[in-house]
Length: 244
Image (cartoon, rainbow, N blue to C red; front, side, top):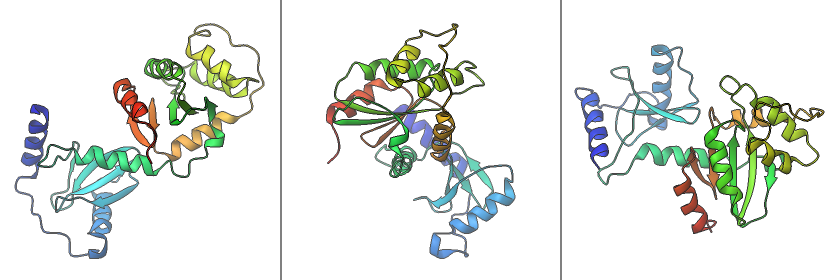
């Protein structure tokens, strides 16, 4: 609760003295169009996907990949943080969760590595050399009530061996066995078996990039988005079962 109060106080200080009158233009979209134009002029190097109004008048939500930041057009300030309501709920986290849930509605699951046939659906974005990805994979492999759809996104700058491992997994005659071997560290620092690359990694990277994801691990557990290997939250969602 202390963290919530501090975050709210910090946001209040940032907003102090900022006029809250909405822009006159683009009333039909809550001023988001005018705010986006101002944002482009003020921060030309900032890459963003969309701008939306927020419940706080004069502050606009800026979507950049999976991240949400805020922009105040009147004062031309960016705010990196969260907006909390009077009930102690993070509106930022709720918006991010909804935004990321919406992005998987048309996801081509047939392109993923599928493991299991349980009632719970888990979509994963993973890097085989990411220690948090391995930790989560070990947890998920111990349950028999999951259908896993795995998309690979090797972070080659920090895990130089990851790309070759992914290509090996996706090109194997039995990708599931290859995946388990790699995630258990069988080929860490050792040569991979010979394989003919089927170029499936490029398809996975295109899909992941389209989701706005830039890191690993990421999960959608029965449609609910989780960033990172939060095993406790994952277990709660799995035990609750699929949404009806």
